Length: 289
Image (tube, rainbow, N blue to C red; front, side, top):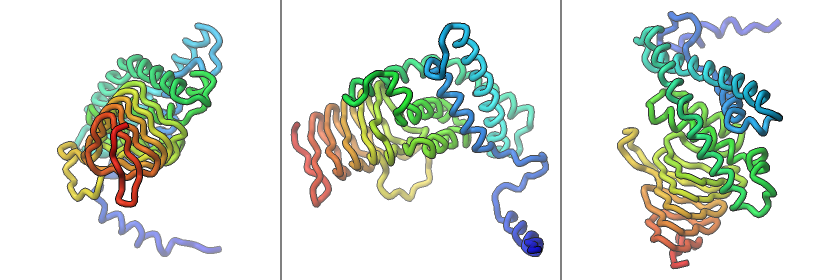
């Protein structure tokens, strides 16, 4: 019978080159992606319990109670693990206390996040003639799941919680095909139609009533700086902007209010308000709408 035992010692030696050497706490303190996936699922149920089979207020309370307990417990434990990983000198007690503070802070604003998501769902219904109801948007559109997770992860990102916001976003990315960095600032009534391949970068700022489609990139140009939080690398998108499929808006530029970016356009310069941006061999043609 084949045995790989002869390779094990040399493979373990490779761990000496990693930046984390603290294995003295028993299990590795890294949070688990499967827990984050479950956390995201319970989060969506919390936001839209009526779409999970609830029929009356007693059932609603039961569903919310269960989902709230599962979500907050997984979140608190995952944050604790992330803090220990990021700050190996932090004690278990301090990490647990900080994790509880972050979890309490998020739980207190879940209702406000849910209000924003209801507006996102209404924007989806109003923006897509193929949808027959708001319920259809909530149940079947991947953009709703992606933005539900992002709005929540963004709150944790702003509190400087390590690892967890990005893990939440990546779990949603794997599930929906939509990649929104938790650092992105996204306004009200945001709608992503279809969504596969859409990406929004860390320092992007998106205004109110913005609609984007599949394959859209709101991204950065080549950037060598590693100074996070000090360099704005991504676009600012104004209010009431529509970005059609496979357009790329790149760099620290501004797209003015009410502009429309056509499919396949490459935009790397500021766009005045009320513009129509069309693709060309040179990247884009900007003209008044």
